[in-house]
Picture 1 (cartoon, rainbow, N blue to C red):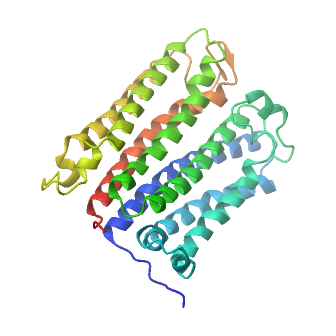
Picture 2 (picture 1 turned 120 degrees about the vertical axis):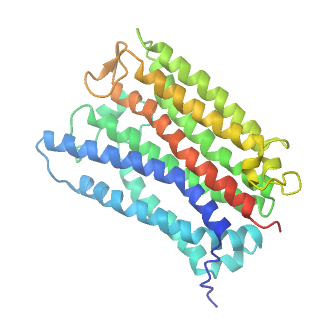
Length: 328
């Protein structure tokens, strides 16, 4: 018999919302990329084409699916994480809906991302030379679209891996809490590789210090957050009701505020650094520090700042949801 129970609860919805935030970060960037690309098509005299129409449809369709997955995730976790009953999950309507609501949008999105040119993650030259004819545009719109598409792709994989980790660890709340490491590592690695590292590999004449500050500050912040995520004296103690009896819950423990402080420090320093650069600014010219193809590395400088903003929301939802989750 099919089970239609969504197993909704405050802790489950808070955790599900936290897991969805990285996907919404990617979709926000994807929407900006499609908007810029549509402007580029109009400048080329193309006001509509099948690929552009598909992307505009995805801009509306993908957030709706992500929102519905928030409602379905608690049932998925109930059967597969709490009960470890995988056959029961097959009879659960919301659990099966979660899988469909992730798989179908992912396949539709990959139809765009796997086109020649777009699928090249870090090679700006290959992206431009292999750009498909059915997506007519001129520079800088190749880079402004492709970089944002890969950010959205990262959001898909983060959500999948985070849910897989939650299912794998089951009722161990300490290990479940450490799942927040997945978006922190993947987003920082992708944005740093495609932005500052990509920029430094081109031997810039100016503003190289901006990329170096990005790397040093981000690596320090990420290492600190990972330590707090996994050490027994960090966030595990913050969500342990035996160790932390504060009436403020996880916010009564120093590790929660230190985690937030590291993230805020990263966002503030990165924003201050990039806005104080000489040539790493939005718009023309599409070169910076003597390096061409700025549109391929500069969006990732700001993309990492947006990631910090989003992760501040995700972390608070996650730590509060895990704190409220009953111990099984």
